[in-house]
Image (cartoon, rainbow, N blue to C red; front, side):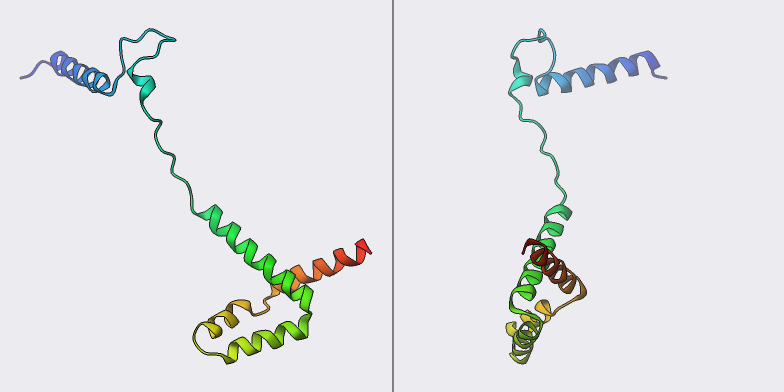
Length: 116
């Protein structure tokens, strides 16, 4: 049987050797050693934030256009896009006036009336 103390000793030695290989150990505090030259670990960033930001920008743009050209003109333009084929039809689907777009346009109307 192996001695449990020796097993623990070799685990500790192995851990110390790994740390030394990475540049840690035997550095006085406040000095620049090998460990100060290593790059920090890269942070993983979530893709959710940029997606939400892009969607907010798209809906704000649609609301601004709906407010600027008016409801009837906007619907006519979307209908002409829907009548097209290929990418025009997809653009018409994306640019349809949804409740959020109408809500944003309504808030912009209220803001414009307050500023007058």
